[in-house]
Amino acid sequence: MDKLKICDECNSEFNKESSEMENLCPECSSVLYGYPNCEHNFIENRCEKCYWNGKSSEYIEKLRAEK
Image 1 (cartoon, rainbow, N blue to C red):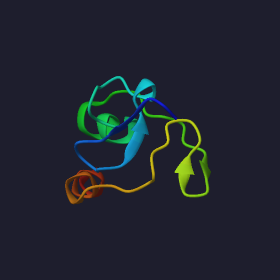
Image 2: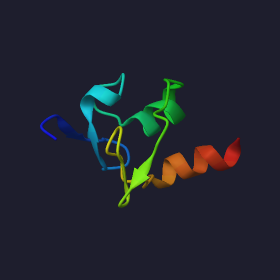
Image 3: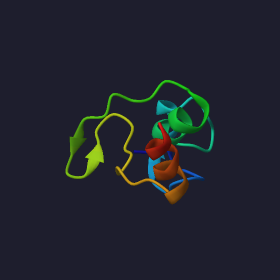
């Protein structure tokens, strides 16, 4: 992939075209700001659509637990 970025929140690589936010993967931008998330399909520990590795920051985990 030639358009990879590193998420500022979870530090996962992601395809920048898969997220509506410049520096956040679709997963983190969804949890933090309500943007649409990717419909993940994992192959070999990465989403084939957005390239997220499935990891989350402690802060994201805390927000998910509060829901």
